[in-house]
Length: 138
Image (cartoon, rainbow, N blue to C red; front, side, top):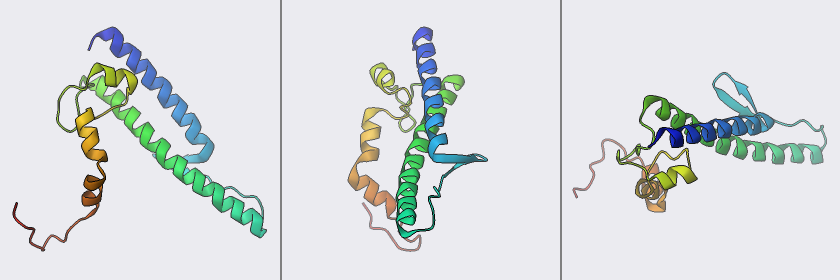
């Protein structure tokens, strides 16, 4: 990838990092390396408690999503510094420039990303068979 394009992508990633950190600070507090969702305090009544719990759920979901985005942005910036930006983390092939321009924090090529997002793959990844159970031979 040419230096000018890489410089533009790095600038875009730094802007994205700043934006995500700002959004995170609105729904979570940074404690060390982690973010902890803010639990709102509206009062002691049932209605206030229900509102607090509802808003906390929103903060929790936003925190999780924003932290994932931030992690990917930081990984992409680290890959730029290491000189490995644009290579798929899974298969090692070059990620097309069009994908990187549209999604600068992409860590996987489209085929590997599709495999990762496949609902069957997600389901079977969650299954963690007991190590002493013999698996069927393929």
